[in-house]
Image 1 (cartoon, rainbow, N blue to C red):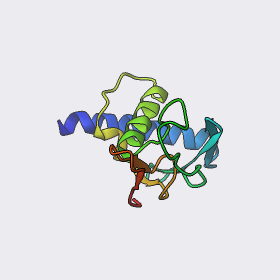
Image 2: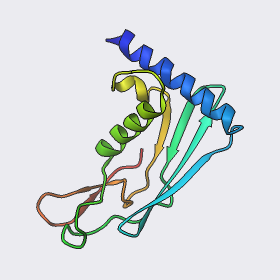
Image 3: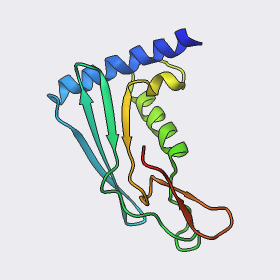
Length: 134
């Protein structure tokens, strides 16, 4: 199993080096909107270490209640990490497996409390629970 994860890690390492070279080591910044609420992402790549930081600082506050929006737009860490894995897999030009090897080079996931990507909705309808900072 470690060999499979190591192979995926090498693929991600090559991707990070390539992106860092193409962007001349500049941070990648993007903003998208879900129901008018901004989701901000800044990706900082350390080319020497081949590590990346996915920083969601500036993302909108969590949405309270399931009935205010047509769907639940809050995303806990358990959803955010697989989304990052899928994005990395799409950017890599070779076939790789989805596994923890994709995340070995992700040094930090900057999620602030009470943001759309940092909460878990309680199943009792009493509102969201705060996530812990990573």
